[in-house]
Length: 195
Image 1 (cartoon, one colour):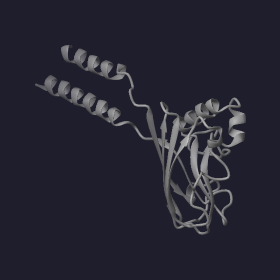
Image 2 (cartoon, one colour):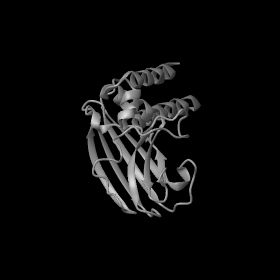
Image 3 (cartoon, one colour):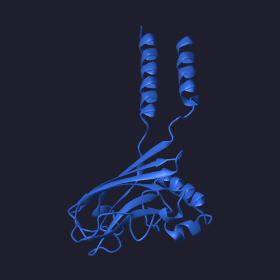
């Protein structure tokens, strides 16, 4: 009984700890098979999106290669009606991310957007979410958190998108540490009960 109280107390304390991080990181693997509808492109890519809710910024890092035709645009679409499936309108700046390499079949990209600036969004996305940047920011973060936003790279051969991937939240290291600590406590209790 004493050990189960210890475990319960430790787990309660871990859950009750205030979150101090203001950054959330989302990643995606981009492929033609993830498009809607899927295509046979051998192109591949990765996307990492870092949202800083304290500074209201979004860092977008993408790499891509093997596209069948020159790329024409890249942006984030949000928000699908079902997580990890379907299609949605463009949420971020159009026609493409600021400074994204254009007219190539491979490349890298790294840019930080000010999400208080309406030009960081598609104007239709702003209109659909309160008519201002703060409403668009809240909707984009909610879409990222729910798995209903995706990174998409469009090309001349595939105007609707050659490769894409749904962005999913990367758990914070603290989450793994709490999980491991909890498992360690449970293991300790189980070991003591056997003795």
